[in-house]
Length: 318
Image (tube, rainbow, N blue to C red; front, top):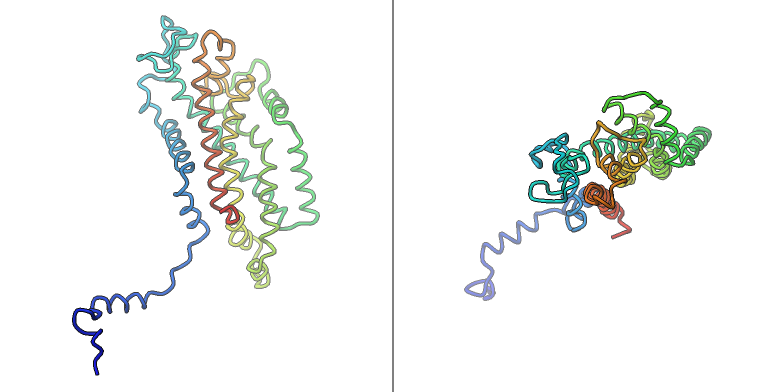
């Protein structure tokens, strides 16, 4: 006898049956990777979105400053010296008649270049030393770790003063590229031990995992184990450090320029502008406030970005 619930108005129609059949055929969803899951978490964080937008804006300013200022960094009009912000010059003029807004826009390039290349050198060199020390262990680990301790024990400002004054003897007049290269190398030389320690710790944990032991048992070469198995699984903590270190390197550039040993004219950077304004802050405060605000906001954006990435890549923090 036919069940009345299967016919007529109260029955299940063909569309519903086909939907049930099709849904039953769907297998389990493929699990997301660590990076895919991290990206899903990051998109939900307002701090990450805000910091990413700020960084993108700063990068765009550095790449194409002409889009944001109709004047170049060398524009000067002494008749407007020390004038405050106005419709003609949004950030005012400095004591030499330079447009502070134009110099702030064009100064983003040098500051960002120093931060990016110093961070790249720091992470690449420190990660290389760290993964070698963690993988081989024993004597090599001890020697490389003690070498890192020596550089980590050097005070940053004192070390930078020694390095930069050594390369810039009195009477020398290096070019813009040489000045930036010297500052980048100085920052990298004094900060690589942090990246080394992070990579070493991650490598010590990763090399004890089963897939690394299996690769070694199957006769995989050392370069294959390091680059195919260890490096992809130790990259996350170093990436977090690199994001935060980039902001710190931009702050370090401003610090060294303020002390008169870092980036200096004819290079235009936020640090150079802050250095030029240190003796005029009381009389012309806008000379210092605007480039200082750009440094602060940029460093804060990179720190916020790094915090967001760290939380997304660390399952324990969720």
